[in-house]
Image (tube, rainbow, N blue to C red; front, side, top):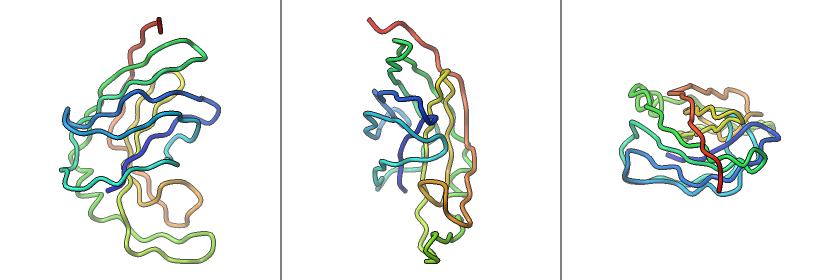
Length: 142
């Protein structure tokens, strides 16, 4: 599995933590695009498919720290194992599909979790299944 994060276009944020099942996480750092997509990814090995994610990020434009937890639909494991092939704009068909677990952080504190067969839009045959969503809380950044 491959995991990564994204945010709405034009919403530059700083990811502080992304932790799955209170045991393992992925780095995030500066995030500037795109919702339902991930540009920077991390390969994940020897971990069970997660049941929840806890995230925290800094939105400097609002001087807020957002934080929240989202339960991940258990059906995501089956979806991840059965993702279809996809085709790049060059015509190349990718049959050995890796599941992309994508965490989205919206500009007003929305948290989304998706599973996809590609890291981003622009591929023919891309699927994007929502596995969970929630609303983050926030506090002032001191």
